[in-house]
Image (cartoon, rainbow, N blue to C red; front, side, top):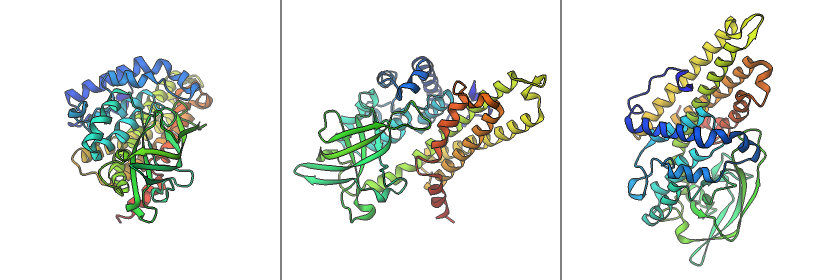
Length: 388
C-alpha cells in the first residue's frame, strides 16, 4: 500500500521478474516473521536471533553474493528491493540491510578464495550475523583518526582498541574490524580484519547503547584486549588496503541510506494521509483544510524527487558509474528531506503525533540518526565541495 503513495514508475532495471519475486518474498517474510514482534523487539532492544536463520533459510540474506559461494548471484537491484521493503514496512531495527549490502560485500569483493568459501555460506545462511566496526569513541566520520591497532604476533595479529555505535554489535559473531597496521602510514596504514567472535579470547562486548530511536536495533560497544586473530583474518592478500577498500564501498553504503530514507518517507506519507482523512476537526476531516493539502502536496513532491534521484543513482551504481560525490548528494539530501518530511507529518497528526503508539512518532525518533551514520551530512557536503 505504501508503495502507491508516490506513483513513481519502476525503472526497467527494477521491474524485472526475478526482482519482483524477491521483493514479494521479502515483504511476505516481514509480514509473517517481523511485524508481529515489532513492539516486543522495541522493548527488548534487539530482534530475535532466529529471525536471521529464518531469513537465511528463505534466501533473503546476501542476495547479491556470487552463486559459486552459495549466493543467489543477484545484484544491487535485489538489495534495493530489500532496503525499500524494510523501510516501507517499518522494520528499521533489523540490521539485515547492513549485513547484506555493507558487511558481506567486503568478503566477496576483496576476500581470498579461502575467505569467500569459508565465510560467505555462513553469512548467507544466517549462521553468522555481520557487523562492521569503524567508529571509535574518539573517531567518528574521520576514519583516518582511528586508534585501534593490529600488531603482528607469531602467525597472527593482536588487536587492541575499542569501537562504539556498532549496529548488530550485541549479536554479531562476524565483524569487519578497521584497525591500524602501520600507525605512521596514513591512509596506507589501515587494514580490515574479518573477525569471527565465537569463543574468541580478548573480545568483549560492552553495553547495548540507550539510543533516542532505533530501539530494536542492538547497537553496542566493542572492546579488543590483546584479541588474537589468525593471519588469514586479514581481508585480502596484504596489509594497508583497508582505507581504499572502505572508500570503494562507501558510495553503496551511502546510497543504501538514501533508499532507506525514501522508504520511510513513503510510509510516513501513507500513515499521515490515512490519519488526516479520518481525523475530524471543526466539523470536517483534516484533509479538507487547504493548509493540510498544501503541506502534503509539498511533501509528496519532495519525496517523489528523492525517489527519482535514488533510482538514478542506483542505475549509475549498477553500471559501475556511481562516484563518491553523487552518492554523498543522495545520502545528505534524502536524509535531510526525510527528517523534514516526518517532522511535518508529526505536526499534521497534532498531539497524537507525539504519542509512541502512533507509527509516525517512532519514525520521527528513528529517522534522526540517518543524518549522522554513514558519514555525517556535513562530511557529505565536504566531499561534494571537493568536486567544485
